[in-house]
Structures are given as structure tokens and as C-alpha cells.
Amino acid sequence: MICGIDEAGRGPVVGPMVIAAVAGDGERLLQLGVRDSKTLSPTKREVIYARIIEVADCVNYVVVEPHIIDEYVRRRMLNSLELDFTARLIELCPAELYYVDSPDVNSRRYGDALSFITGRRVVALHGGESVPQVAAASIVAKVIRDRLIDILKREIGDFGSGYPSDVKTIEWLRLGKIPVECVRRSWRTLRYLNT
Image 1 (tube, one colour):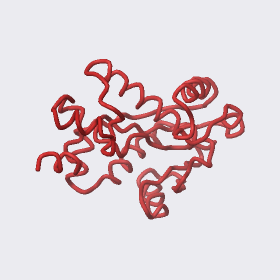
Image 2 (spheres, helix red, strand yellow):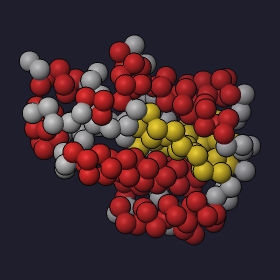
Image 3 (cartoon, helix red, strand yellow):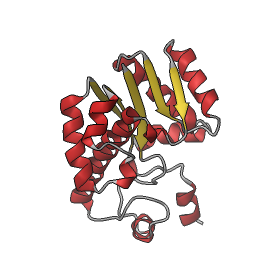
Image 4 (tube, one colour):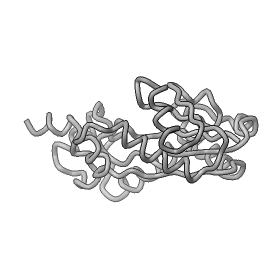
């Protein structure tokens, strides 16, 4: 069996990062229409997500809150964060082979590190969504993150996408409208706002 792992929300200044693992038959996943979550509408992602849950042998994810991300970023170890949490997911989803969308510019180094840590066969790729299990993990991670962001928006209002390039997000940050526990305080975006 093959397991794919991918994340959603690495770049935003607001909200968690979600890393997901999906193990199962690649052909069955392809029949569901899995592909990179960024190419699917939110509605389509939700539909495919529900089907993934039904047909996959293992679906699991971790939510990495902003304060945890900040701890790793302050130590200049963001890739290590993904390494640590991906290793946890590998332990939770048994498979013979793991394909991981690599955050490291050197995907082989990243895959080798995961193999060393977990004792499992891991192949790290750039653009790993070409592997159906990774594409499915991309969808799961994105759906979970979107749901968490939607909950936050219902609580405090529409702050935009949460990305540093979003004018609305920046304005909300500037005005202090986003709860501090939801913000990645280690992001440069905040340093620029405070100067």
C-alpha cells in the first residue's frame, strides 16, 4: 500500500498548518477526481474529501497551531516542523511506501531524513500531487484548514485569506482584529507592520 502526505497552510500569517496522510489504492483515488487541492473549488474539494474518507484505507491529519509554528520558525527550523509532524503521520498510517510533498529544496535530503527517523521507505517529491495519494492528502489538508479558518471567520469576521499578500488580512492585522493566538507572530509580515 502507498501513503501520500501533503500540507495546507504553510505560508499564511493567520491560522494553523494542516498536514494530512492518505493511504489507499491509487486507481480508486483517481476515480474520485483527486488532484492538487489548489486546482479544485472549495465545493469540489468537500465532495472529493467525503469520498476519500469512504474509500481510503487510512486518513489522518495533524493541526499545527500558530504558536507551534512560531517556536520552530524562531529556531529557523520550519522544515523540521514538517519533518517532525510528517514522521508522526507515518507512524499512524501503515504503508509499504510513503510519498511526501517536500518542503525542502532538496527533496532527496528530506525523504532520506524521514526514512532515517521512521525506518520506512519515503520518497519526497516536489509537486507530489502527481501521486494520487499525495493529491488526496492535499485535499484532506486543505479541507480541514478551510474548515478551521471558516470557524475563525464566523467568530471574528472576514479577515481575508490569511496570507501576507492579502490587503484585507494585513489591514485586520494592523488594526489588531485577529486574536493573537491565531497569528503566526514569527512571520516577517508582523515585523513590517510594527515598524
